[in-house]
Amino acid sequence: MTAVSSKERRRRKPARIVQPIIAILLVVALLGVPFWLVVVTAGKNQAQAFNPSLSLPTHWQLFQNFATVLDQGRMIPAFLGSLLIMVPSVAGVLLLGAMASWILGRRRSKPIAFVYALAISGIVLPPAVVTIVLLLRQLGLAGTAGGMIGVYMGMYLSTVIFFVTGFVRTIPVELEEAARVDGASPFTIFFRIILPLLGPTLATATILICLYIWNDVFYALFVIGGRIDTLPLNLFQVASSGLYLQNWNLIFAYIILMSVPLLITFAVMQRKIISGITSGGVK
Image (cartoon, rainbow, N blue to C red; front, side):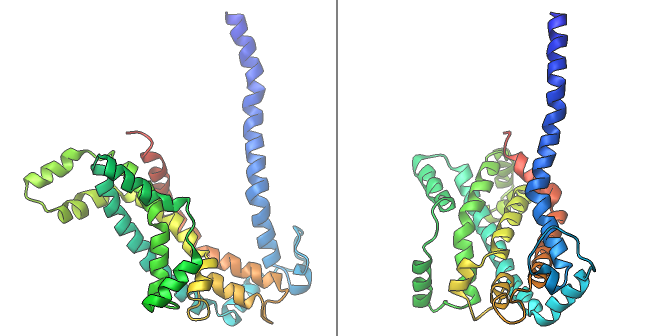
């Protein structure tokens, strides 16, 4: 038995070494190569960046391209427009989603199970953009920040409910019962007990929803296109204009600057995001 076990261990030892190497090479190929292409292209001049490649620029002008984008690309107003849309959308959908998840996670019945299935169906059922635009026109919200915020909240409410409901079921009911004995109202229980405990899961949902909204072009183009500038919309517009036409160095420089706020958000919330992903797995 010992001899067989030793042979099996010797056979498995190369596999333990090869598998991590293959995983690292795949990560480099899938993530590192595109990232390198964006960075080196953003650091080139227009002539060198005309045909994007992985080669290094003869002379780095990354910060010069950043300055050009900020000065001539209308990036600051677009950044403020993105914040105007994203911050209320994320805050509203997290609050409403957490409230709905608390109810759905605590009630156990067939009607509640049906409501939960209906609530998370939005993850797999894409919204009909034509219907959305027509409805917003009827309500007088087409082309407004409020209309766009409402669309995003409706689109991503399912994502929050899906993430949070499972975590709510892991919170001991005794905490709420003790608060009720002390005379706490449902709002007090939710905001003082439940909501603080949902921090890791809400952090995970936050980064996902921020990613969706920050990079959205399709729905923003139909709902607020031409009225409010967001970063993706602005990039789409200026990429077709004289400034960015075939200027891949400026386009990639814009993409890098547009990604910085999301990278900062992820870096700040990294621990909570990882905790939120794993916390619902064990009850």
